[in-house]
Amino acid sequence: MTYRSLPKVELHLHFEGAAPPEFIRQLAHEKKVDLSKIFNSDGTYAYRDFDHFLEVYEGATSVLKSPEDFARLCTAVAEQSAQHGVVYTELFISPDFCGGSDVSAWREYLAAIKEGADKAEAQHGITIKGVATCIRHFGPEMAKQSALCAAETVGDFLTGFGMGGAEMMHRPSDFAYSFDMAREAGLQLTCHAGEWGGPDMVADTINDLRVERIGHGINAIKDRALVDRIAAAGIVLEVCPGSNVFLNASGDLKDHPIKALRDAGVKVTVSTDDPPFFQTTMTKEYEDLAAAFGWDETDFNALNQTALDAAFCDAATKDKIAKRLE
Ligand code: HPA
Ligand code: ZN
Image 1 (cartoon, rainbow, N blue to C red):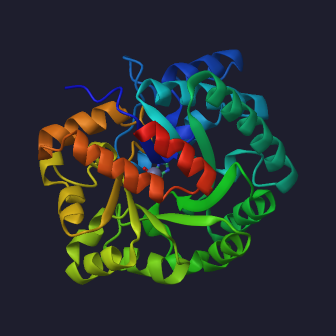
Image 2 (cartoon, rainbow, N blue to C red):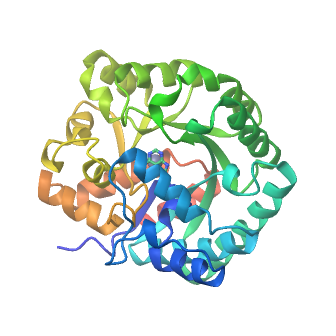
């Protein structure tokens, strides 16, 4: 059975990390940048482990320069997602890569990306919202700049603030100021935790950053009391099983914590993270989960409803997307 045409809601998609390799190669060619060392001979991205992945990720991102480049990327990403049945997606966009977290530059980038998103909605029927995402290993000061950018541009398109990057570099409390600023501006909050860090990192992220959603969160499974707390609080996990297996953040898919977390009453959702980097798609995620756990259309419809309920968008958008899921 293929799940390609099943309507899907994706909450965790890094904008730059969703760039098809052909798109990055084309931009590198146009700008005469040599990126041969980040690609394998078969055209896939080449990296050894998570830290190296982050380096290659920044290498690929280095050819994305102007607001127009990002608008083009938005079109390419939306087209790719729509081909896999995605009707709503939240793009994690890093102000650091869009004008170096300078507020007026960021405004221009964001306007161009929103234009790309509007075009994609008209052409492919996919609704896109933006989550400004700071980069943990760039440190708390840069995160403040990203939060300021986000706070200044909160609106119909930019609805959330979050953090990705090297999880073990800082404790969550180092970023409390930024998350407070974003919350006070009206942004909804998510943060990567428990992909590499243990349950303590997940607990501190909930306590210190007061997020509604957690990116990954899979290592919460190692602390039963924490799992129960996450379930009771209704905190949503943006689980990216293919990413975890590919990067060795978890073992084999059949042992992946997504099933135990779901069985324990945690609100789990399914996303791709950085699809071309992890050689995945939303269709492949569903097919692999179906094979590993026997999940079927009923399970996936429930997961998509959970994702829609947790989406960082207004009620009218939720109503519109709910009709697409029927
Ligand atoms: N994990 C953490 N940070 C990231 C990722 C990821 O998978 N992708 C892009 N930034
Ligand atoms: Zn991620």
